[in-house]
Structure formats: C-alpha cells, structure tokens
Length: 290
Length: 248
Image 1 (cartoon, rainbow over the protein chains, first blue to last red):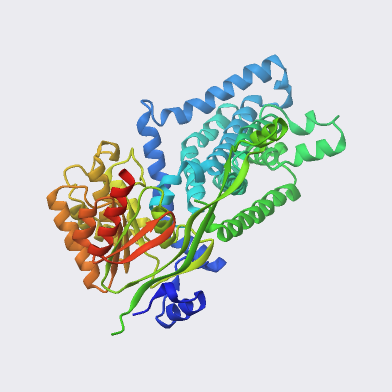
Image 2 (tube, rainbow over the protein chains, first blue to last red):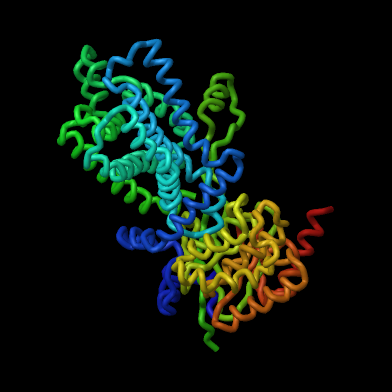
C-alpha cells in the first residue's frame, strides 16, 4: 500500500500515471473544449427553453408581455422623441423606423445583458452540474433569440401596414436576428468574464446599456444627427455595432437605410472575431468562472 | 498486496484571496483601507495527501469551516488547487445537496436537463428517464415544480440524476440520511453497485451514524490539514473526542 503523505509530488505523479490516472483539473485543448460544447448542444437548447418556461410561468399574461413591452416602448419613444423633440422627420416612415429600431435594440440588449450577468445569476446550477461554463451565457443568448421571434415577426405586418412593398430581402430577417444575438452575446461574454474578476464592473453594465440606447439611433437617424459633431465622435457613433445592426434590420425593408457593404462586413467580421476571442477566454479561465 | 488506486491527491493546497475591511492604525490608513479593502489570503487546505482504492467507500469528516467543501470541489474538478494535484480514473461525479437546480420547473424537466448536462444524447435521455424517475421515487410528484419538493425529495432527484451515468467515483455531499427508509435502501443498493463495478464512493456527512454505516475508511480534516486517515471506528473515535473537547 502506498502512503501518499510520505510521497513527494513527483513520486505521486509517477505513481498516478503508472496506474493510468488523469488529473481531474486537466485543461482541455481548445478544440476539445469547443467539441464538448457542441456535444452538449441539446442541453444548451433545453436549458434556454426551460428558462423561458420558468420565466413566463410566473406572469399571468405570460408570453403576451413579449409583445406588449416593446410596442409600448415604441409608443413611448414615439411621443417623447418623435413628437416632443421632433425626430419624426428623420425618416419618411418613422413608425416603422422606430419599431424596427426598438425591437432590434431590445434583442441586442437582452442578449448582452442577460449573458453578461448569467454566470453570477446561475451560480447554483453551475455548482451542481459540471459542464463548460460558456454554455450558460450561450443559453441566455439563445433564450433571448427564441423569445424575440414572435415579436420580431411583427415587423412583417408592420411593414405592410405602413405601405412598404414586400421584397426578397425580407427573408434575410432571421439571419440578421441571429447576427444581432451573437453580437450582443459576444460582448456579454467578455463582460461576464470581467464581472467574475471584478464585481464592480456589474455596476457599470446598466450604464453602458443606457449609453448604447441613447447613441444607437433607435429614435433618430444617426448619420443625420451626428453630421455636425466632431469627426471622431461622428465616426464612432455612425459605425458603432448597435447603430449598424439597427440600420441593417431597417435596411431589409427600407433600402435607403442599409449601411454600406463594407460596414456590414465589418459587423460580421467584428462579431466573429469577438465571439472567438471570448471562447478562448472562457476556455482558458474555465476553472475560475464558478 | 497491490490495490489499484482510483484517486490520488498529492500535497493539495487551496488559498483564497478575500477582500476584508480590516481595522488599520491611523485615520488616513483607516479611510484608505475602507475604500480599497484589504486583500488577505486564507489557507483553506494545507498539504492534503491521500488515495482511494477500488471498491472503497471513504467518509470525510470535519467541523464547519474545516475545508471539507473546498476539498470536495477540488475532487470534482470544480476548483483548481493552488498547488498540488488530484489524479483520478475519470472526473468524479458530484452529488450535492446544497446546489439547486431550476426550482420553478418540474422534477421531470430537471431530470431531463440534468441527464443532458451529463452528456447523454436525447435518445439516451429518453431511455434512461424512466429509470431515473424510479430511483428518485418521485413518480407521483414528477410534474410538480421543484419548489414544492422537500429537501429530501430534492436530494433524491439529484441522486437519481448523478447515478444515471455510473461513475467511477461518486462524491456525495451531505446527501444521504435524508429521505425515507425505502429511498435509503435503494440508494444503499446503488452505492454497493458502484463499489462492485470497480468504483469508489466518497461522502461528506455531518451524521457520524451515516458515515460509519457506509464507509470503511474515514478522512478527518481540521483547519485545512489532514488530522487522521484510517479505519472508520478509530478516526471517528478521535473525532468524537475532539468534538467533546470543543464543547467544554
């Protein structure tokens, strides 16, 4: 019988390896990690669904709020900004401009905010079951996407009512939504890692969300409004990912709103790079997320 | 006689860095330390070494704050030791009574979710699900939300999930001792199954009776160090003496 207390670390290691034992905290290779996440995709999907069921079970009106909240928000913005501050003139079809903006921004924000705090809010589950931690924020992003589908499909009737002629571009909407969610999720992933390291950052997240809300052109046309701003500020505001994402949704219905192809490509590549980077961070920090 | 080790822990140390509001001398220092907080290190585990052989069931005892939970978390691969290492045939499956699942969802959904998290495919989940419900003994309550379950029922559900993929090493954190006699019998049967199928069980439990009923060996941890490691009766006797002294 081996007495481990008298063995040095090296001897113990040799002893363990001679019996084919592996370290329980062995770090996987990056692709091994991605593979494990892919294997657990059914879990991620069911987890997202479960969250939705759990969330709507509490409310009497349930899913109805998913429609009501964004529409009431749009109405509020219409009165506050469109009428009172007169941004109505920014678009020929201001109602559609506003609704498309609110819904896209909501989707982005849901995905970003819920994923950024998910590691803290789901601490219990992560401690009970052992699985790659990145699946928690991903499930939260997926949840935001699924929940938004009924509401965002409202854009079609809205477009018809406000007199937009249907075109093939309308069919690209689902892809645009997926891109929006992944973009929000990627930033949320980075933020969630930061929150685990420095809790104080959690305090700054709502502030950051508010900043995005007022600068992304939900209720005004960014290009027109930042025309007279200093160059650097104008460039940042016009090319911020949220502003571009909003215009991309609108552009599917109103071609004049569509950003340039370089800008669209920028959003796609930027999202892909950020998402991959976040994945690498999670992979490297896997044992410290809990 | 050469027994096969299933798990080896060698010189495991765990330190935590915590921010504390320590009182400092001088008014200015006091203000600074209140704003910045002090970073101090807590040694949760100090130089822990032991091994677990095939077919063993090992109990872990220790007073509150002795480092039991840190050890269990390290064993389950949920936490990295600051130094030292743990080797095992495969990452031990942890069954914790403290962890929660999704409370406002039904037991059925929680079982399915738990099985998926273990890496089972949807088909395998469908096949394993009836058995898991049977083990949990919750057939009449399976469609009620977990909020409505007693702590014993929650423990049984988690036990049923953890056991669905027969692990080499099962870690049980305070789980047994809850639940009715029938469940106790089922779970005892299952633990024996694990031990016979070349596995090992490690359990943390406050109840010395539960440990002496199930374990052949006991590890006693006190203030992060390994106090004793040996046959159940001997170690539990030492431990009881220690508890009696503390009360005086």
